[in-house]
Length: 498
Image (cartoon, rainbow, N blue to C red; front, side, top):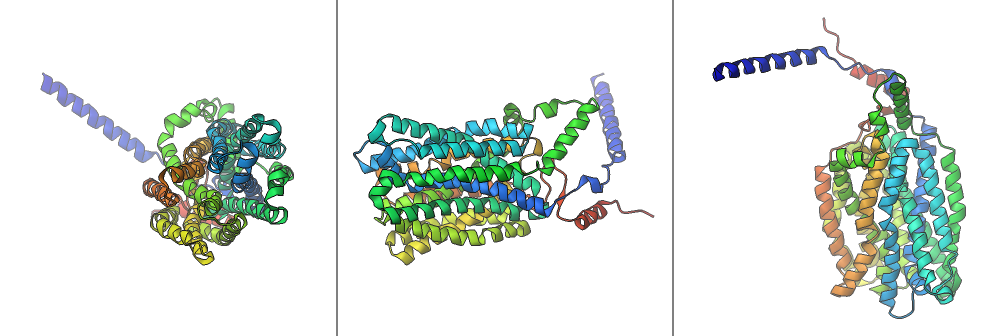
């Protein structure tokens, strides 16, 4: 009897299998239509890239100023005594803004998925400008005592909170505007903004140091770079408010409106900005994002933020000479970064990212041995070796990260993943390196720290999928011309049978 029941069950299972197979054969995906493809407006793409990149440049101008004035800020805002303690206190205040970045990402990211990328990016720009401007107005420790570092920390928290919505939104904005085959190229301009911000900050600090001298800089000159942020913020805000919303977000909103008007379920649309949904449904991609960003940020902050302090504190370089060497390195990187973006469009994101990660694994120790020699040529060569590895990451990452997540949760997921990682690994890099050098007594700590980060990065890149020249998940294909759209429709058309 049992054998008979089992035989009947097997027969029913086979019938169900054949029924599902025949249904699948009958069901065909609708043919690709011209209206399913987004044809980008080249002028609109360039405006979007300019506005997003300028905001990113301002963000890193603000952070760069603090890094390059870390020694001076330590003297101004903290009690006099041990110089190393003052420097660590200054870098701790630098790091504290990163503690609230994940909170900013959790607030602004889902908001950007609900109300649009443009509005949130305008809001983060205003907050960043206010926070930076306010730091330039805080009285010193000698004037108001304990309240000086308290106010410094408060406005650093304002900066960090606003930054939580900046990178995720800016990279999403460019990625959703750019055509699929040129996303790497246009995305690389975002990181050119990073380099431009750092270069502008280093250049301004260098000019002020040379013109005013150390006493005047510590007395009042350090305030000038922070006060410049106000007008820059207004320019960035103006450019961002002139932009239209991204085509991908507009199409998603249209689809949501039609689904609601036809009585379809709105569970997906009401949950699109839900943090619980991001962590529940997209946690593997979040982990991958955190690993990629962690490896990239540690190497980024080590070279672009910490290096001038390393040169002056550990090698006895003059502050201005260290900044000048870094400016030279960054200018070279700015000249080649868009070419790296083009290479990632042609050969893929993974080969370029792997080149950068392996580069840090291989050249970190030789580069720092060169830097320790102290001569102008040796230091320049060591920094350039590190810079060439970094530019492989800089020119590729801003096109890689937005492609990890679907359109409905892209801003939120990227903001959460990026800022969790930046909080844990990026902003703490100068503090950790300075503390480890103090504890261990070896000035090779930056090399070892970069290598450890790069090893994590190699594993992360090996685990990710290639996304170059492919549509963003949850978005229609995006092309640069109508002819390319027609070719895509023709290529997707079923072959006639006779």
